[in-house]
Length: 481
Image (cartoon, rainbow, N blue to C red; front, side, top):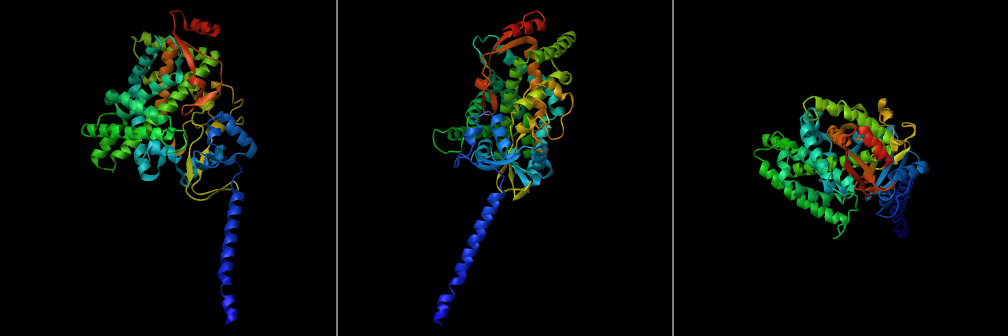
């Protein structure tokens, strides 16, 4: 009996020891199978490195060190970064059911958890149909005149400015007005400045760490987000009867029909999401367009010749404005935009989240980890784009290989507003190039985040109106300067 008193406690201890060994073995096995890479500092991870280095350097250094798949930690999230077209296709299209759309929690809270970007299934399909109905080529071809009016108003304001213009800030004004028109319709005009002010405060926190401490960029952004939500709810209530135009009008009509449940909170989140998607990305691309055209005068001269031909046609046809068909008749300018989207790669990557443990190329992607397809790295790989650092629009005379050109993403969650963004660029470039010339101030090639990568200082420029001489004389004069 005395023997049994000492015998029975051992099996539980042995079981506990065995479980501990199994846990440690499992942990060792998982760590061994994770992709190589660095998680950086606790909590901060490699966030500061990502947003203080040139993005090409950040990604290329890690790719050379670890290969096409590596781990990191940014914006409070452990993540796996992938940089091959095949891997991007798997995550975004062929096995998209294993990777749900997501952003870091800080970005989701700022944009709004009900926004289109963060969902799958029926709710995503419902929203995608409404957004596509608002931003498809068929829907926006009647908006050319309104976009042109906004572009001409912006450019006319530059004529009287004697100090250098910050290209990024001016392009943000332009893109914001087009985004407001598209999201809220013409009824948005009286409320535009209030929304612009709050949105400006909100966007300053997009790349910040989610610290709920007064005075931090994130805390300030969330205060602005709350105020913006309240303003949008008032707009929704005011327009509930007549609905009006823009995406908001389409959403209110759907809500009114009661065919689908769509709350005011969901509507507000998606309006903010559309402004986010249509504002900063387009403004950043336009800023790079002016930079690349400035740095490549031969390309600028060829684009100017194409746009001058369009201008002469408009003059012959009773001084009319641009039409949708005119913007389809700008093949070189379109290739310049394509090359800018590739070279600048405003959307360096997108976020997905593994919904379960996923085995990929011998590595484990743990459930809950973010997965980032690196569009920028793919766009700057010499196997797909020879001499990738050279600005060469002629490379788009031939279609790129599948899954190697993804400036607007890929799969079901690709950007539904891409055609509107291209229309904005074509309209602005037509009037800028045929009426003005610009000179970049300073020679620095560094970048900053605002919130996407853009030339340092937002590309300061001086703008002058073109004289009555030919456009080519103006370009030659510009080259001498």
